[in-house]
Length: 237
Ligand code: ADP
Ligand code: UDP
Image (cartoon, rainbow, N blue to C red; front, top):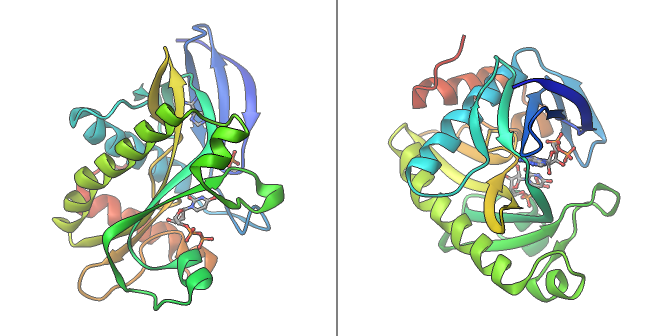
């Protein structure tokens, strides 16, 4: 697999083409951003931790029958993935109230959500990723009804795999964001699953072990991500 040109430089990852048009290389950088790119910092080791963490999680999901982009780890900070035609709508499941749900609906942070909620957000930093619904996605041509139904099914299937995985390692999976794309006509999980895009709390103390440490200036961001990886048995170097 030969690395070719830089295709896209996002806020946290750089995407490269390869000699195979069906595959891309994702490079996880140390850049950490919040508030739609308004707060940006470099956090040493974060790219390596998230790359290895994401590879571990995607392998768990693949083993459970969820189609993912993941091909293989390439280096400490890079992995090879299927090139997806990305759907610009983010899927969020919440098991516990936090973040924008608390701000929007005025419910208490920490409230258990049973059944878990499912939300869609348009991926658009300039518009601050507004919440949208299925009819918007269909009317504006972002996704078809069949694709949305499959994205929702897979997003909940991810919860069925990851909630117990984190729980058995002493953590609560509070919420998470997934991005999907199309490969060979089918819906496939893309982008990343890491503490940058989910909320994880210690089960006993409810200590935050995710990007809220960065958003809220709590410090120890990468140390928390490494703690999560250690508890799950993700090999880091
Ligand atoms: P952002 O675009 O929000 O700044 P990143 O820095 O994570 O985010 O950039 C990664 C970009 O690559 C995102 O736009 C994401 O949608 C896209 N992407 C992720 N996985 C794939 C994939 N398998 N195929 C094509 N594009 C992908
Ligand atoms: N999230 C994300 N990228 C985004 C927006 C949200 O990864 O652009 C994740 C976020 O880390 C959290 C979940 O999606 O795990 C729900 O986020 P929320 O809607 O509460 O927004 P926030 O409080 O982060 O603004």
